[in-house]
Amino acid sequence: MMVFKIDLVNNPEPIRVNFDRQLKRVQRDVLRMGALVETSCQLARQAMFERDLEAADQIIVADREIDALYRQIELDCVNMIALQSPVAQDLRLLSALMQLVRDIERIGDYAKNLGEVSVRLFPYEPQPQMIQIRTMFDRCRAMLATGLKALSDLDAKSAEDMQLLDDAVDSDYKNLYTLLTQKTELQGSIEPIVLMVLAIRHIERMADHSTNIGKRVSYIVTGER
Image 1 (spheres, rainbow, N blue to C red):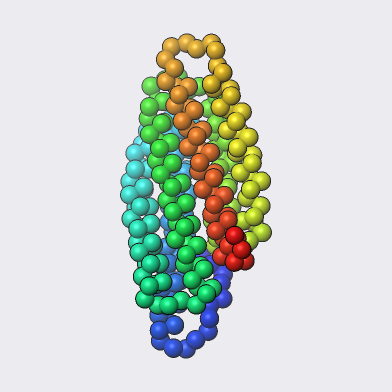
Image 2 (image 1 turned 90 degrees about the horizontal axis):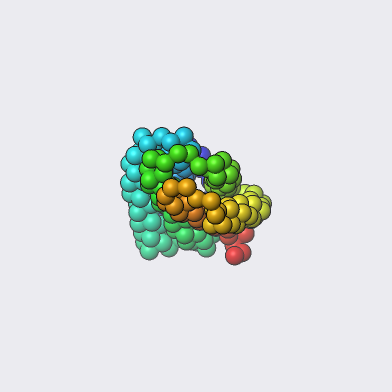
């Protein structure tokens, strides 16, 4: 399990030692939560593009674990701020983590939403636009991986570079939205088109939250918003 590469204040007092131990546990839990969300995204990919309904069911189970871990991390951060009087650097880290885990949790929610879209798309024939949607989703998953790696390493440069990746996903979204909504030759139900528009919206929001992770990491490292 990776732990953030951050220098903690060197203080032999038992209170500080206990704080450092708690802080490292929170760091590990955040990275574990990130890994769970990455797994949910992989399951969403299987459900969406491999038509794997079992994967869609597995996302629901994973989401419960993600939500429980999110609540625990948030509670631990609040307790440490309220009871331990952290120094400025640690306070910045804790406050940023509380915002960051919310972004991670929301990405997990959108992965679950994609699983639900997949179930509703399953009765229909595979749509040709799914190839482009898969490319967009893979870009988004790469953004999440980059953000979590930047978080693990506290790499502000990688975090700042994520905006370029987000621009590519935004471009995918605009192109696909235009393609789907201006489709004139429709055969059968319009529901698959509506569901694919919903899917690309979920993916676009996942990318936005991944960008936020990069911004939180940059703040943790530099202290600048």
